[in-house]
Image 1 (cartoon, rainbow, N blue to C red):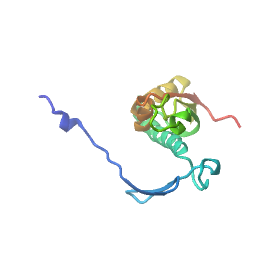
Image 2: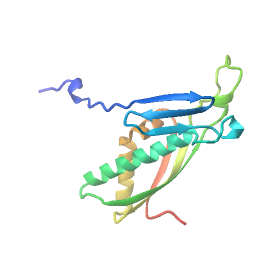
Image 3: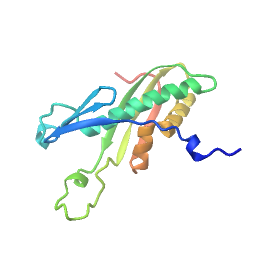
Image 4: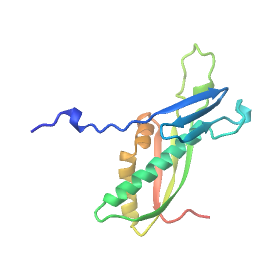
Length: 165
Protein backbone atom coordinates (compact mmCIF):
# COMPACT_ATOMS: atom_id res chain seq x y z
CA UNK A 1 0.00 0.00 0.00
CA UNK A 2 1.39 3.40 -1.01
CA UNK A 3 1.32 6.25 1.44
CA UNK A 4 0.55 9.71 0.18
CA UNK A 5 3.16 12.45 0.49
CA UNK A 6 0.88 14.27 2.95
CA UNK A 7 1.11 11.40 5.45
CA UNK A 8 4.92 11.38 5.24
CA UNK A 9 5.46 15.06 6.04
CA UNK A 10 6.01 15.88 9.72
CA UNK A 11 6.00 19.67 9.81
CA UNK A 12 7.85 21.45 12.62
CA UNK A 13 6.96 25.12 12.75
CA UNK A 14 8.66 28.13 14.31
CA UNK A 15 7.41 31.65 14.97
CA UNK A 16 8.94 34.88 16.17
CA UNK A 17 7.74 38.45 16.48
CA UNK A 18 10.25 41.26 16.12
CA UNK A 19 10.68 45.01 16.29
CA UNK A 20 13.62 47.05 15.12
CA UNK A 21 15.02 50.54 15.44
CA UNK A 22 17.91 51.64 13.28
CA UNK A 23 20.12 48.57 12.74
CA UNK A 24 19.10 46.84 16.00
CA UNK A 25 16.34 44.25 16.30
CA UNK A 26 14.66 42.49 19.19
CA UNK A 27 12.78 39.26 18.54
CA UNK A 28 10.72 37.06 20.83
CA UNK A 29 10.20 33.39 20.11
CA UNK A 30 6.82 31.72 20.48
CA UNK A 31 8.05 30.16 23.74
CA UNK A 32 9.13 33.53 25.18
CA UNK A 33 12.89 33.65 24.54
CA UNK A 34 14.40 37.01 23.63
CA UNK A 35 16.89 37.34 20.74
CA UNK A 36 18.61 40.64 20.06
CA UNK A 37 20.87 41.77 17.23
CA UNK A 38 22.86 44.93 16.62
CA UNK A 39 25.87 46.08 14.65
CA UNK A 40 29.18 47.50 15.83
CA UNK A 41 29.44 51.27 16.22
CA UNK A 42 31.61 51.56 13.10
CA UNK A 43 28.72 50.05 11.11
CA UNK A 44 26.08 52.38 12.54
CA UNK A 45 24.97 50.33 15.55
CA UNK A 46 25.38 50.64 19.29
CA UNK A 47 27.21 47.31 19.68
CA UNK A 48 24.65 46.24 22.30
CA UNK A 49 24.07 42.73 20.89
CA UNK A 50 25.57 40.17 18.55
CA UNK A 51 25.64 40.72 14.81
CA UNK A 52 23.12 38.63 12.84
CA UNK A 53 25.84 36.50 11.19
CA UNK A 54 27.20 35.64 14.66
CA UNK A 55 23.71 34.38 15.53
CA UNK A 56 23.74 32.32 12.33
CA UNK A 57 26.98 30.67 13.50
CA UNK A 58 25.53 30.17 16.99
CA UNK A 59 22.40 28.65 15.42
CA UNK A 60 24.55 26.29 13.41
CA UNK A 61 26.47 25.20 16.54
CA UNK A 62 23.27 24.71 18.52
CA UNK A 63 21.51 22.82 15.76
CA UNK A 64 24.49 20.58 15.03
CA UNK A 65 24.94 19.96 18.78
CA UNK A 66 21.34 18.78 19.14
CA UNK A 67 21.51 16.77 15.93
CA UNK A 68 24.79 15.13 16.99
CA UNK A 69 23.20 13.98 20.23
CA UNK A 70 20.29 12.44 18.30
CA UNK A 71 22.59 10.77 15.77
CA UNK A 72 24.98 9.42 18.43
CA UNK A 73 22.12 7.86 20.41
CA UNK A 74 20.83 6.07 17.31
CA UNK A 75 24.13 4.70 16.03
CA UNK A 76 24.82 0.97 16.31
CA UNK A 77 26.22 0.71 18.93
CA UNK A 78 25.11 4.02 20.49
CA UNK A 79 27.84 6.61 21.11
CA UNK A 80 28.00 8.69 24.29
CA UNK A 81 29.08 12.30 23.70
CA UNK A 82 30.22 14.13 26.84
CA UNK A 83 30.49 17.51 25.11
CA UNK A 84 31.31 19.24 21.84
CA UNK A 85 33.44 22.40 21.66
CA UNK A 86 32.99 24.50 18.54
CA UNK A 87 35.09 27.07 16.74
CA UNK A 88 33.59 28.41 13.53
CA UNK A 89 34.62 31.16 11.13
CA UNK A 90 32.47 32.69 8.40
CA UNK A 91 33.51 34.91 5.57
CA UNK A 92 31.51 36.90 3.08
CA UNK A 93 32.19 39.62 0.55
CA UNK A 94 30.74 42.82 2.06
CA UNK A 95 30.20 44.28 -1.38
CA UNK A 96 27.21 41.96 -1.71
CA UNK A 97 25.53 44.00 1.02
CA UNK A 98 26.86 47.54 0.63
CA UNK A 99 27.30 47.92 -3.15
CA UNK A 100 25.78 51.06 -4.65
CA UNK A 101 23.86 52.23 -6.52
CA UNK A 102 20.88 50.09 -5.54
CA UNK A 103 19.73 50.06 -9.16
CA UNK A 104 22.90 48.24 -10.28
CA UNK A 105 22.83 44.40 -10.21
CA UNK A 106 24.97 42.91 -7.45
CA UNK A 107 28.23 41.37 -8.60
CA UNK A 108 28.42 39.02 -5.61
CA UNK A 109 26.03 37.39 -3.15
CA UNK A 110 25.39 38.95 0.28
CA UNK A 111 25.42 35.50 1.94
CA UNK A 112 28.50 34.05 3.59
CA UNK A 113 30.57 32.27 0.97
CA UNK A 114 32.29 29.91 3.40
CA UNK A 115 31.86 28.66 6.96
CA UNK A 116 34.66 26.53 8.34
CA UNK A 117 35.83 25.31 11.68
CA UNK A 118 36.23 22.46 14.09
CA UNK A 119 33.95 20.42 16.32
CA UNK A 120 36.01 18.81 19.11
CA UNK A 121 34.00 15.87 20.43
CA UNK A 122 34.71 14.66 23.96
CA UNK A 123 33.84 10.97 23.68
CA UNK A 124 35.27 7.49 23.95
CA UNK A 125 34.23 6.84 20.33
CA UNK A 126 36.82 6.41 17.60
CA UNK A 127 37.79 9.11 15.11
CA UNK A 128 36.01 7.10 12.41
CA UNK A 129 32.77 7.06 14.44
CA UNK A 130 33.01 10.81 15.13
CA UNK A 131 33.50 11.53 11.43
CA UNK A 132 30.44 9.38 10.68
CA UNK A 133 28.45 11.37 13.24
CA UNK A 134 29.60 14.56 11.51
CA UNK A 135 28.43 13.33 8.09
CA UNK A 136 25.00 12.40 9.48
CA UNK A 137 24.77 15.72 11.32
CA UNK A 138 25.52 17.79 8.20
CA UNK A 139 22.85 15.86 6.30
CA UNK A 140 20.19 16.12 9.04
CA UNK A 141 20.75 19.53 10.67
CA UNK A 142 18.17 22.04 9.30
CA UNK A 143 20.56 25.00 9.71
CA UNK A 144 23.44 23.17 7.97
CA UNK A 145 21.07 22.19 5.17
CA UNK A 146 19.87 25.79 4.77
CA UNK A 147 23.47 27.04 4.67
CA UNK A 148 24.72 24.50 2.13
CA UNK A 149 21.67 24.82 -0.10
CA UNK A 150 22.26 28.58 -0.23
CA UNK A 151 25.55 27.83 -1.96
CA UNK A 152 27.76 28.53 1.05
CA UNK A 153 30.62 26.08 1.53
CA UNK A 154 30.40 24.34 4.92
CA UNK A 155 33.58 22.67 6.12
CA UNK A 156 33.56 21.58 9.76
CA UNK A 157 36.18 19.06 10.84
CA UNK A 158 34.92 16.61 13.47
CA UNK A 159 37.77 15.61 15.78
CA UNK A 160 37.88 13.36 18.85
CA UNK A 161 39.22 15.26 21.84
CA UNK A 162 39.19 18.68 23.44
CA UNK A 163 40.22 21.97 21.85
CA UNK A 164 43.77 23.14 22.35
CA UNK A 165 44.13 25.60 25.22
